[in-house]
Length: 193
Image 1 (cartoon, rainbow, N blue to C red):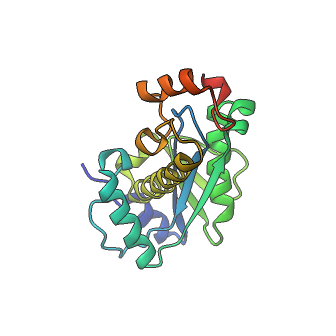
Image 2: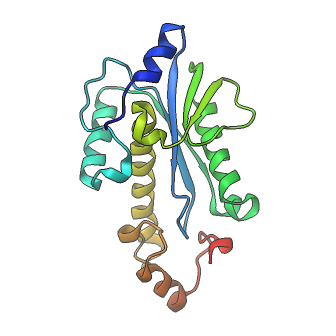
């Protein structure tokens, strides 16, 4: 089953401007957790919007480029490796989602993948597996994943030898072996090592 606009349509009928929010990078050993908030117009005709984990990197990039070409509004929030170590990954993920939401001006309701975000200034609904059910959340997952993957490719230039462009900071054997060989960088999550 593909994600739908069911929730967005219902909320729009009662006057809301709806955004979808999702995060990526919770399970990584390196770098920030990244979140996106996006307002996907109900008349957008972009195919293949679904959970970013179900799409190839090429397809995610293609969809992201369509969002940019069409002027679809989105914002990014993040929590650093240092914040993750200080707060824990769950609280840091929620913080990154709150930052993405707070940066988005004009929204009145957020559909959030799995979580409820404390102290949000707009209405919200946390939906388990929202990235597989709700089109706006799926779109947010794509934006967050593309932004984080691009950031990992940039970090790969600064921290060569770790393979960040390849595994994007996840706990692969290649990454773990590189940490054993080279040591942890300042952007590794100490609480994950």
